[in-house]
Length: 134
Image (cartoon, rainbow, N blue to C red; front, side, top):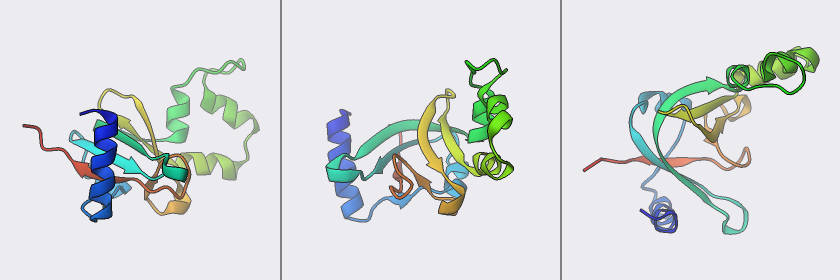
C-alpha cells in the first residue's frame, strides 16, 4: 500500500474512532504482530508507519548501542559524563519501539505521558490497528 493511500485510510479510520491508542502495555502484547500507525502533526503533516512490533527499549539502553564520537564507548556512557541523575532517570524511563529487525521507529513513550506512545512531539499520540495478513 502506498504511503499516501495508507495515510488517507488511517485518517478516515481515526475519524471514525476505529483505531486504538498505542500504550506500552498494548505494544508489549503486540510484539511479533504487524501494525499500522498514525499520528497527527501540525498543519496536516501527519505520519504513518507499517511494521512488525519488536522489542521495547529505554532510550538509555538504546544509547548503549549507539557509537559516540566523544571518546566514550557509547552514547550512554557519554550521557553519564554530564547528565544529572534526574535526566538519566528520564532517559531510562522513556521507551521506544523497535521493529522486529531492531530498527528504530521513533515512536516513544515518555514518563510524563503515563505509558502512551507519541511521535514527533510529546502531545501527538500514536493510534494503531493490527494488520491481519492474508
